[in-house]
Image 1 (cartoon, rainbow, N blue to C red):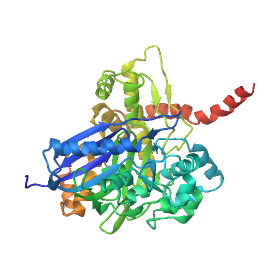
Image 2: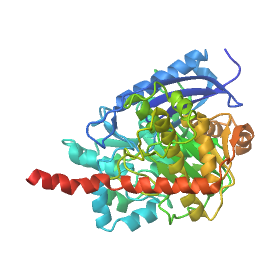
Image 3: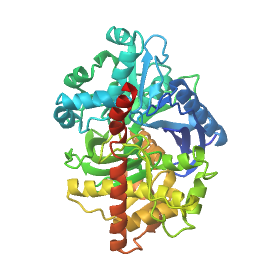
Image 4: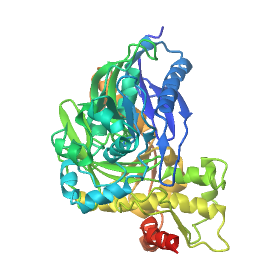
Length: 510
């Protein structure tokens, strides 16, 4: 048996579940990944089967340990990170979900959110949660399940249903269905938690119609929540770290000082800037969120969320069949000097920050007879960078700080054309670390700090190393013209679904 011990991180994402084994220097010893079904019952609806999520995550944990030839005793601790706002409701007695998980991208509660705004609920939700009213967050999803699944509300009010975001669902399963808890970084994304007190809020629960008895206990990001059940891998290991994926990436990128920022280019794009122990309110449609709670301290961040980033690359591959692989998008994009005037707005699930338009839909503007596959690939990558640049402008305005560098991670950060265009747009260095899997790494760090595997944040900062720095190579005037084109394309995509409704109704009336 190995004398060295390791940390196992479970990274439950939107399209796949991964497990990664790290050693003390954060070298990846082994990993495993498994994709699972994306369910689209209606336009704008996105669901996952919670049992598939659990099966895929459990399988990758066993596979990663087998690949590393490790026994359960070799694992010092286990950390969990997850897609955040996805809502799971399950039966307290049977442990079975009452409905599919409603995914963070899902827009079915847009009309209820609009009603909340009309009812004047925005100021109180904003002040208590740091969030805007949008279908993105979990609270309205839970309400939808209670109101639309037969018998669900009566069961919930009788204390017979449990709710959790994906971290809580995995913890419940891993612990042999004994622990029902979440961490503060996930709890703050439900619209049911007061970020200033760190507790579930009765006024918010009443507003969204969610019974308190459904809710998990709120814990810190770095503590022992329980142990892995005897019939699972790695049996008996302490489950000691939990954080929502974006806050985990911020921690994994060692962004501990106020003003430091990271951008994760995953399925969506998520930009977070640390603000320390101050919850900075946003005046530019960003979110104020808990970054983490650890060592008795709660620290905050400003966040901007782009719903469709790497997912636009998957769309080109899977739905449009323009490429055979994600890597081919970057390769084709590099064959043309620009997008040939094409702007692609991937508002497939509405627009996130700073626009918050659930009725926006995708648009391709500026197509000519000469527009080809390479231009679409380049426009897709540029759309990711444009959306991120919009967030950074809002973040700098809110914080009063000018970014000195942007640390990047996530699968799409492997694309050199994307990061070069991002640096050109920002006029700021874009820095890719050697380890771009910082989401899983953040969960591993939380678990390792809770169990003494790593001694301090200095260990984490010392592990961070640069792979490549991208600096601006195009004139600011040229980039300003491109930004103007992007803004015009955005305006054409906004409000599309909302505007279409009266016409559809009137057509039906004839």
